[in-house]
Length: 199
Image (cartoon, rainbow, N blue to C red; front, side, top):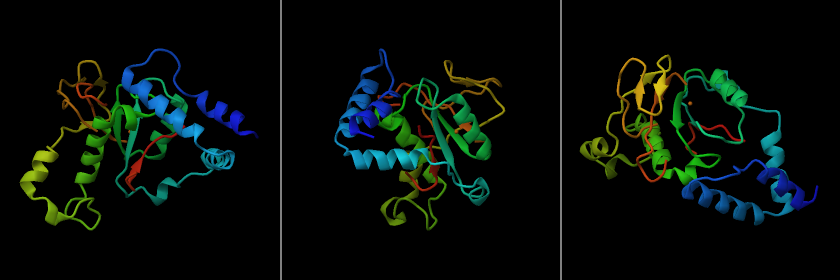
């Protein structure tokens, strides 16, 4: 298939209509990146993305997983998202109010915070993302304050930032059994154990 048709297939899933400046910049950046790919590169990536294959959940059920998702429109259908939740029932969910298809670009501050929260559990182990000699316990605590976890059975009010049981969610935080409710107050909203739905 010609390169221009492949690019048209990909870009047809990009958000159309008015979006905030950060999301518009993210879409423009990704359009530029797609334009820079050759026909062979784009075809191989699409083939890999569309193959009927997945990681068998029973092989990773003991590995800590965080699934990142957005509440606004994206290329993924709600059915695909729910299927992933079912495959990884013990995973934590990192929900962003907005972010479209590229939350890691337009909501980078929130995404980075979710990474910190996810990776904090590995501090002091061979899987730590930072050399223990480079940071002391006080700095770690200041960098990653303990968030308040909310059980998945509690509904989260994304507007008020409160769960149905009245607990106030952290201002900014970290898709599984626990949920952290982020805030849009920052100017932005893989690791090996991070799972993210892709379109």
